[in-house]
Image (cartoon, rainbow, N blue to C red; front, side, top):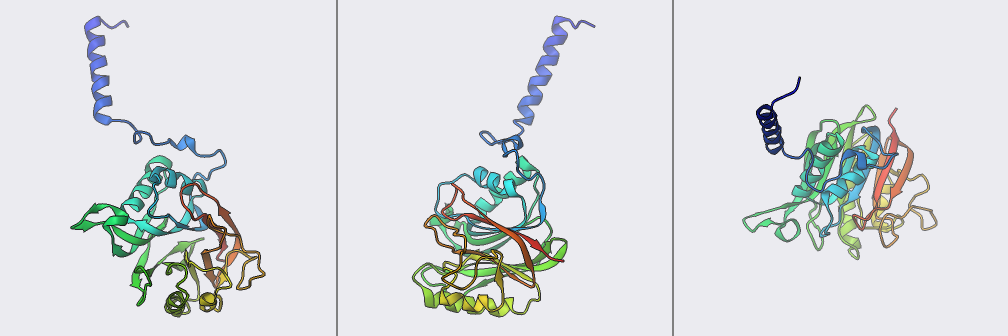
Length: 279
């Protein structure tokens, strides 16, 4: 059937109106799911966890951060130096661009306009966050009694990793050259971790493995890196741009199958990933 001129014009107008109303299918300038590396994971890996200090302040795109995470698609990821609005953006991009759906809990300890934007009367919340493909329960958010030069704390949630219920902690300890402060913080954290038969502790501890302030953690957990321990002679993989190991996946009552450190251009800390055996 051949449409008349007036009919063709009407059909064209309807199509144009639909395009205008619907808008583009992805945000302007955002990559499509097809821009993932060819070997990227296409769904969450149930037994995979990650930790990542996002670096703040850093001028990096949340689209880029989401693409990095989607490449490995962990079941759980802990963020440090995280603004709520950045976490929301990363989470939205993971869902809209890659079909990866995560729940979120926050462990914010600061309302910081300078770090997170916003307006003086409603500054952005800043601290830690956990994304989990499974729902999370029993969240806690604890500020350390002494944060050092900046308020610091830990958060904890219960979720499922590898099909098993597990308590997940996420922390960011005091900045470098504040060893005594970090020792107090790990003392607080170690007490609550020790109550768990099975726990995963993610975070930026701002200390190398043989630092004395980490003694309490090493006494009750192992690092997911099998070559890493509380000794200066170990072969721990470094996790920062200045080639120190500051980022840890501590495991209590859980074995690691493998760990990888993924250098990234989108933070001064690398992505640290571990695949776990929770049988």
